Length: 403
Image (cartoon, rainbow, N blue to C red; front, side, top):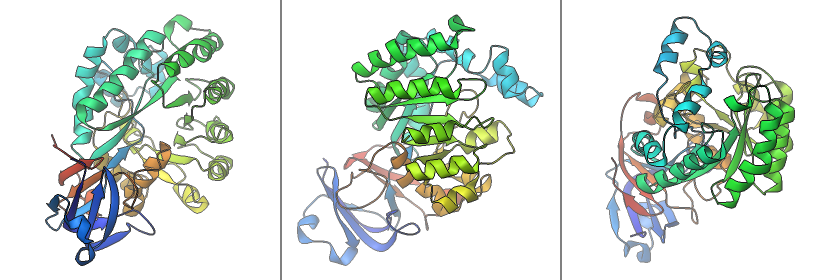
């Protein structure tokens, strides 16, 4: 059933300033789309004829959106966590065959069913916190067959866990071992064979690349983006995480949906992504897990009017985080976001980072992706670290059972 209405509820619409609050309100939807919202005593009679839900005095928000994850993978990298705490750096581990390369070995050795089995609990944890849309990247396969398995597993997890999955091809994540010393040859294979093949199978919604000293150069990333553009696919970038390689400025020249990480982003990069309408996706889980000290330039992004999204960056090596609400708290405590900015970063701005204009806000015509919370005020979602206040979720107007 995709019709209904709810009252005895407060709304955080994320339309307009602040949280876009409406108190003592109601909201109605038909065929999975919001058709009306406003004061509870003004709901139209035809909406009252729809199936009714009592909000119990809680708060209704858009379904949450996790817009940057590497959640499909095999294996475990807890040993690297221990190594870092014993003094090894992220770069040291990568150069010794750990890091992304370790996940590539484990993921290549897993079939599609195994990838789904290992990844499903992580996706379920996000769904249980009100996530209704999830981005999942490839990038731990780094050959055509393995990348295909990852993307197919990602699509299957959307159906199994009852959420929308947007798939991103991240073949330019790391150099696979068989191409050691031949990065340009790998990029050629990626652009000419892997990406066109996977796109033709309908497995790719966007294309990402890791522009960094331990990954790929701006020139190599530009080749990837040009190939994506030729296929009509939007791009995004891992940029300025460990150094300033100008990746965000490059991505902005391709009208990128988002530039992600950004700890080393400079003023020119801020100006470029602001002009391009590119969303800054901030990943405080990785910042916390790697014990970084250089924060993204929040004040400059704010002043330039760059939309800021937050995401778990769920991955096995640098952010094994499966709580988007914890991510919001980290965004405030570690990066200096306000609670309003943090929650906009899980809804309205996260939708923009995925190029989705039909969700992330509560407004007529948008998808009825809704989350009902047993809280006194929206800030409680950020403040109550470790709490689980979710009561109910509707995805496309249909009530979803929470795990």
